[in-house]
Image (cartoon, one colour):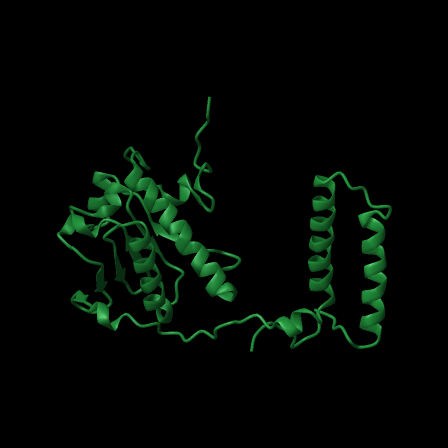
Length: 243
């Protein structure tokens, strides 16, 4: 028998407690009863991954903080939500820790995720939150919906205006620099040695020298090369794979 509690994870990084309307006195406080609502949970999990990987200084420790997830009928009224709110379908989530200067970046990523999941979704920009839903076709939309609610009146934004507000530096791998990195070389050579010994084992060949002995020899050789200045210490400030 599976025990479900507030701390039960719906997906890897989001629990029932985070997505439930905990302030409501009415039941249900959370509902995820079909594939469409479950897809939404996987979609916001992907959005969280984007946040952490793209802006680690902001989101690596805290992730995305949910300010509103599922709403039951009465709680949606108390919130002043639209009678047709997609929060009632468990297909909308609001986050309150995304900086306003990144709203458009997140909207673009949500558009990509919606396309990947074959959903007609949308975003709404609020003063202290950004809303993500995967069910904008409920309101009659046939394409991605983008609304700015930070002014006195809601403003529908043109999808042509969806350009990143933050320019990010593209990272590329510098192979020459990698082959001078002792830590990377050890990992690379270990994989090569393991592969060779696995291939030999498939043909019943047992080398006289063990893989551990080879790795010990390679470790000594790399230490000598580092002492000569041919290899670098990967912890040295300023060393990276960026060009």
